[in-house]
Amino acid sequence: MSLQDLRLKIKKKEAQLAVIGLGYVGLPVACEFAKAGFLVIGIEKRADRVEMINSGVSPIEGDEPGLQELLAEVTATRRLKATTDYRMLSNCDVILIDVETPVDGNNIPRYNALKSALEDLGPVLKDQALVIIESTISPGTIEKVALPILTQTSGKELNRDFYLGNCPERVMPGKLLQNLNQISRVLGGMNPETASVMADLYRNVVRADLDLADCITAELVKTTENAYRDVQIAFANEVAMICEAVGADVWRVRELVNKSPYRNMHLPGAGVGGHCIPKDPWLLVNSVKDMGLSLKIIPAARQINNSMPLHVIELLENALQTSGSRLSNSCILVLGYAYLENSDDVRNSPSEVLVNGLREKGAKVVIHDPYVREYQDDLFEAAKGCDAVIVMVKHNEYLHLDLDQLRSIMRTPILIDGRNLFTPEQAISHQFQYRGIGQGNHHSA
Ligand code: SAJ
Image (tube, rainbow, N blue to C red; front, side, top):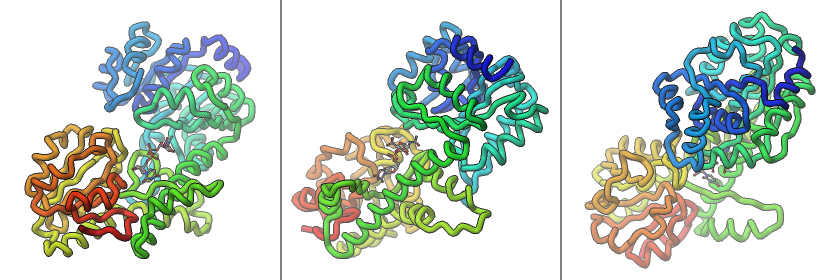
């Protein structure tokens, strides 16, 4: 069979698909291709998740519109079958890889999961199969990591016996299926024909642009788009620090800046969390780490964004000092532990950095988050006797918080606003002492 034969099998939906890694990316991907009419084998290392998936129950936490129903349908019709057994891949024509690609404490990707998946796939790789890595990877990883492992473990030759591409995922928790269908994708192929065949495949699930490219371009686009966001957020945070220093309101400044054409100043805040933004800039930086290129903006943006939870602590200490209190014997209520509003996802949450910092300084910390199971106790019960409340996440549940009720049960009415939930005027009119990211004036009544 040739690549053209594979293209034909894909067009007739006779190609047998596989997805390695049935997490928050791989599972929706497997379901969507099964829904499109392909037979899909899902490889998942955790047997408990395999069992859940095959019984039609999604292991993905959080609200994912349509996913549970779709999974139930495609497993009931046996279009999707999950397994831990790589031998099931020996008859697969297209294998998508959606495993995690974290960076270590030195911001270096180790690719343990990716290397393991490739090493297990190689020996069972079918002749003329197409392997597509969807995970976010450092530019150069296809060439320097994936290709050598597949070649060595399969004994096959690229573009003769198998084909290789990179199609970075672009999904966000809470909108997995919607993103998959509606956001354009970059199709990087190790040769142009491979990219073209990838387009025939993705056309079955993506109703947006499918942009053909080579692999290094695809790897660069994904890591760059998230580094871009991180830098934009860091810029907003740096302007917020300026506004605090000179006594201005960053939110008013941002509103008026963004009235200028071609401006889009992002939201300053208490930090940057999640599974993508804190990691992907380092994947981009890592692509040139041994080339003597001295990068400045991207690492500096990471440093600024990582410092924001610590800046929230500085705002708190300043407010406590004004009240004659000390952090070491205070009780602090933290509102929001997820990394994003209206989400239960706590990965790389800025609140974790904040809470650890407060406890290291001797404060007693109480956490509330309506979406995170262990923190769903009554907010006002949690606030009893507290010396300050810190807003870390702008959950909808906090938008109409009764400040009078809150003040009546707190020991010291201090409000530290990490997400511009309240205006200083609102807080002060309810007799709170207020500090906010980027709020350089309006401290207290
Ligand atoms: N944040 C700010 N200021 C902003 C925007 C976000 O402080 O102006 C913070 C958030 O509070 C959060 C973190 O940054 O802690 C990340 O927020 P996010 O909106 O970027 O959400 P993510 O992490 O789910 O980002 C994903 C990314 N999508 C992919 O990687 C495919 C990102 O590229 C998207 O821009 C984002 O979703 C989105 O908004 O769709």
